[in-house]
Structures are given as structure tokens and as C-alpha cells.
Length: 449
Image (cartoon, rainbow, N blue to C red; front, side):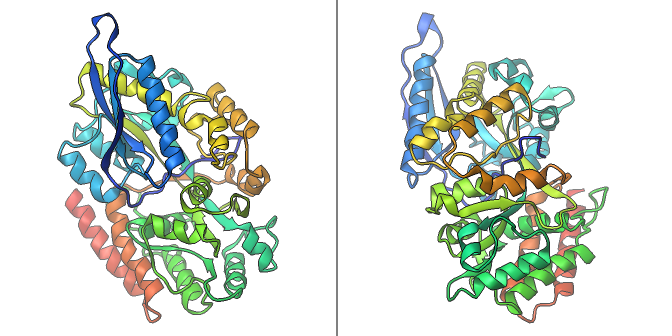
């Protein structure tokens, strides 16, 4: 899902906090306009004070420019937590503007949990520059239900400093799984605490990474009609057997099970993990949130990739919102998430507060004028050695994108068990793990109809 400039962004699913954060009181409404209060998702956590302050500054700027609007932020990072999303949605507790991953678009729209914003898209000034294919994903029966916010693809993130220390060439990262395995052994041989290759085993992230890996090998999670599991296949067995052998034969994966998004990010940030699957924003998260050294990380193409998992997210509006609230919420989304040089695209500010700038990590605008302006601004304010990402840029454009399966979160939870099995038990049977997962997946799919 790349265009000529190179990369995409992954919003990794994982554990997040969901407590009300700061708000900015509105200035009095002008001309007797009705005052409104909106709630918005994705305020950075208190553990990232500079990023949180930048968010709060944006809230202040926005409310000053929009008299009568009060913004209340939800302290929530990552923006989507699969464990809390369903209950929150069912309980009508979503913010006025909330984040929905692409795998949940159809369910949220189909259940009437997202407002029809067809007549309000003019609030997103660069709406016409958003990629048509990602806009199509939030459109049903000709009606628009969301603002695409993220589009991403997967590669291999690696620690260049560890490559050098292990006698590997960081400018020539692995291109095959055999090369990954060999590099992982050399990194693990550096001593106690070093992990050649990191992988998830739970929290829905194990199944998510299994999906990445099987797609790369040319396999599928589901049959073409989405009625049956398709992962109990030669490709699925190769994924688990490779992990089993790296863990138990090579001893290159450490002995700690990594459950959930944050666990592997912490490990990467420690500087002792050599490689992991991920998209470009992994570099940003590892540096921003988990204290990794900005110069150490690179990203390359997915090994032997026949396809790469694609995904993304969109902002949707609570259907309970009044017309005034919906308009204000979309104007906030426009300002904070869709304006060149502002909000998340204020790369000059990001650089000034010490954020790593230079990872080309969002293809939602593609090669449109807005997309090109964002990329040019990113390069101009880069604080990172952009050549570290050249292997990914050069290879990702040739890899076909492949969407997440339907009922992704349920499938990921089922596949977590298989991932955990091979990483926690030396005597685990790959065939049995996949057979058990297949049975559970087929039962779930049948129940879903």
C-alpha cells in the first residue's frame, strides 16, 4: 500500500488506558451560536508529557479558533484497544469522535454505531486528496461514515546497532527467512539478555503477527468466501515451525513470552532485540514511548514477501452527536489529523520536542498534492537518518497489499493460542495447534453466519 514516496503507517493494536483527560474551556460563542462540548479520542498518555502537551496546545489553538466549542480529551494510547472497544461501543460510551480499525468498519456501520457524515465531508478541507480506495472502505450504499486516518503495510524492523555489533551489515538486512534466522542467531550470541528476533504470543497481537507472516508466505487466513479457516496449510505450518525452531533449536528468541503490544515495544526500546515484524511507525513508537535510540533502528521489506498485511483506521462520529457536535468533531479531526504542518503533521514541532521525524509513515493521502506536501515537510524537518528506511522504500512498493480478514480480532485471539504454544512448549505439535485453532475458528465463523 505504498506509493512512490514509500511507506505506510501501522497503528498497532494493544493495551491502552481509557480515562478522561484534559479539556479546554471554550471561548464564548460568537453571534449567539450554540455552545457545544465534544469528546475526542487519542490524547497521548501522561507517560509522554511532551506529546501530551503538544496535544493540549492543539486543543487550545482549536478552541480559540472555534468559539463556543469545548473539547474534552480521552487519555488513550494506542487509540484502539480490542478488549475495551466492543463493550464501549455496545454501551454507547464512545467519544464524539472515536477511532475504528478497518477490520471493524463494517460491523460499526452495519450496527448503526457511526453517523452518516456524507453532508459534512466539506469539514475535512483536503477530503478530495484522500486516497479513493481508503475512502471507499468507509462508504456504504453511497453514504460516508468515517474519515480515513491511517493506512499501513508491514516490513521487518531491525536494530542496526546490534547488526553491527554482531558482525552483520546493517545496510544489507535480511531478505529471506533463512537470513533472518541466521542473523537472529548471531545477535543472540552476543550474550545474556540479547534476543535475535522478537515475537508476540498473546493479547490478539500473536494472531495478528501470525497473519502478517502467513500473508508474506503467500497463505491465507480464510477461504475466499470467508466461511472457513484456511490457515491450517503448508504456509501456516511454515510460520509456526520457523518460530518453534528459532525458539528451541537456535535459542535466538529469548525465554520470555511477549504478550500484548507494549511488551515487544519495551523489549525493542531496550536495545537488545534485533528484529521484529512491523510497519514504519514502530520506529516512532519505540523511540517516543520506549526510549530507544533514534539512530539505531531501520526497516526493510518483508522477507520473501508475496503479500503484506495492510490495515488502517478511521475516525467515526458517534451517532448520538447533534449536528453541531458532529460538525465541531469533524473540524477537530480536520485540524489535528488532516492539516499540513499542523497537529500530527507538525513535523517542525515534533523535531523541536525531540520526536523522531523522517519515518514516512502514513499513506492515507498517497501521491496527492496533500500527500506530497506532507512528505516534503517530513523530509525537510527530518531528525532521523532517512537512509535507514531506504530498504523498505525500495521494496515495499512491489509487494501487493492484503487486507486483514473479517472477524479479525476473534481470529487473532484464536491464533494467539497457536503462537503461544510454539513459543512456550518445546514439545508443541504444530499440526495439533493449527488443527485446534482451525476447529475453533470454524465454529466462530459458523456462529457469525
